[in-house]
Image 1 (cartoon, rainbow, N blue to C red):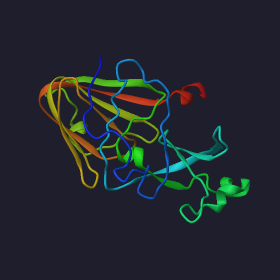
Image 2: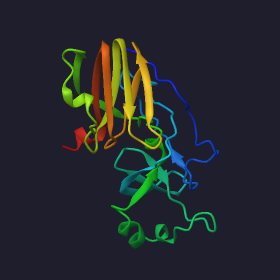
Image 3: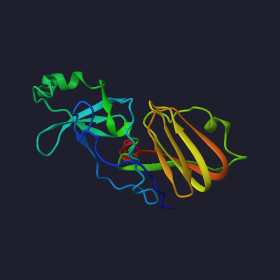
Image 4: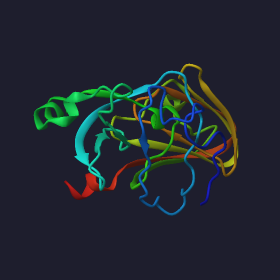
Length: 205
């Protein structure tokens, strides 16, 4: 099923990748059939912080931080704009594994590439939707959600500052970053939630 996602899609309104000038790398991995193009581009005021799980050089020799959310960011040392002398040494890079960076792509609820669906909850209608989905809840760390409306309509709220609130109709979808509070109101409709993880996490097991 192809679903639609509405909203702002692009770089930060300032023209930079993030509020502090961090540059964003969009991974080019294909999305599983049925949800290509569902990345939502809504800028959130509260920046989500993600743990650095690896630091590597790209094809140009620039340093890239891989984040726990499966997004990636350049972490260049270019004073006076970017003061990151630690990235120039192996010791400094090793010491920053586990540190946290703001992730603008999570702030925009932008689905990373190269994820695979490992489980789908639903379909649910207004009489069968679990109570837990109606309350504030989170998707587990390391897992993305993709909320999809199959029939009718639903209201989705993500508790950021300011909150994301969307009235969704059949064919719409909403990516859900790991660890972000959200809730669903369903009066008349049918919904499903896909749960997605990085492809490499399956092959590494």
